[in-house]
Image (tube, rainbow, N blue to C red; front, top):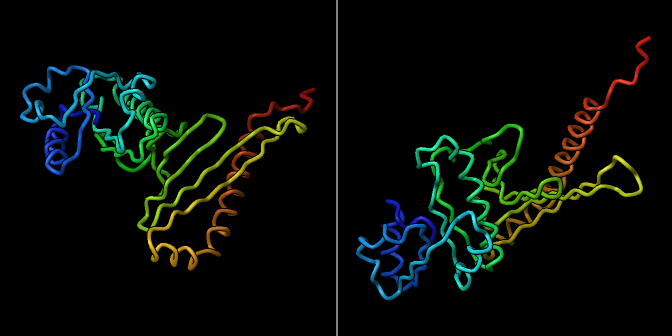
Length: 226
């Protein structure tokens, strides 16, 4: 758990301990947790860590089934903190993947309402329509998770790669996944099966059109000015 010195975090830890869970609390300054009534509990482990250190975080997260991200640098009085917070959250998410944790639970902080924080860039945690950005690899891939209520988990991924034999051309791959939850999820999937293909084909055509328009606008004007 990252951010156990906060208001919500300080109340969540006792609840987890009461239910028999072991809790590993990550803190940059462990002394801040000494005053907590649960700090001396035998099932609590307090470790020193830095959210910007992905490799170190992966080691500290090893063996954990779930990871809680409850720390927000935007709470600090720092003019750079709004841009810093998504960077730290992304570092934490990468560490969770490396450590093999089954789940990550993210508590939104100030400024985490729906929408994009930067109109020119897509960042981890941004909202795109009813999708949430869960993975971004610059010029390579984009992973989105559906936030509408469905009996399961819907994920949409885009991957791009340049075509070696055709300079200036890029191959776009769209991958849609749905993990049904119970029988209701299976029935839901088969009931809507024809529609995702239609919707996603239109989405891909829109992406292609936008990319071609952007590329055309970026090309230098080769018309003879004489």
